[in-house]
Amino acid sequence: MLKKYRDSFRYLSTVHLAHEFLIPVLWLAWAFGWLASSQWSSPEKRSQTLRERRFHLAEMAVAVGLFSFPVLGYGWLGRRILPRTEAFFVIGAALLVIGLGFTVWARLSLGRNWSGYVTLKASHRLVRSGPYALVRHPIYTGLLCAMLGTTIAIDEWRAVLALIIATETLVRKLQLEERWLAEEFGSEYATYRNGVKALVPWLI
Image 1 (tube, rainbow, N blue to C red):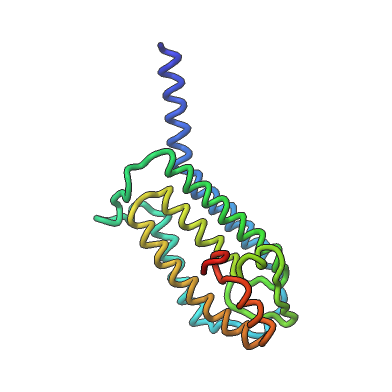
Image 2: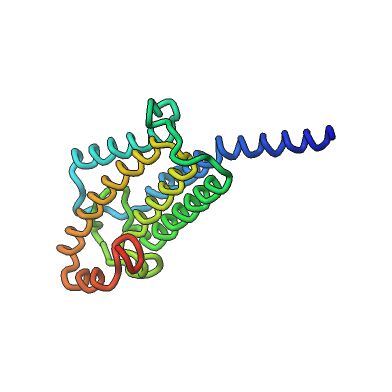
């Protein structure tokens, strides 16, 4: 009987640690690798203004804060969306891993064309292989999938608000990229856009 209770305690402790630390550890590991690889980017010939970059960063900082700090869940923001279950947490964590993995695949496919903000590189080329054969903006697809998974795992309204804010800023950034790529590549990008969806394969 004592062994049964001890095993149950260990299981509950492991579950608690997973709920507490798995999501932030995955995000931190991804962020560290993402920042470390930013030095391999090519020189720019066109980029967002400093004001646009700061506004984008401010919005994302609000979203990250809502995701990261339960203390920000005042009132209805801290309420559960659905009764918490292990299944929801596992689904959320799986979507997070899939989404972050998709961003890494896209980052590797872009090579030196990648940047943390909207730019055109001096030797910019239109990438249409790898995840770019599935969607035109796979990094945003991966991030949104990862943030959806985080929202499901957290299961509080503050996470829903964070997801809405992050989606808005990524879509606005996407629209600027679309305009610049159309100007840079003309009919080649028009053909690509007609054949490949922006964010969700065969849908959006």
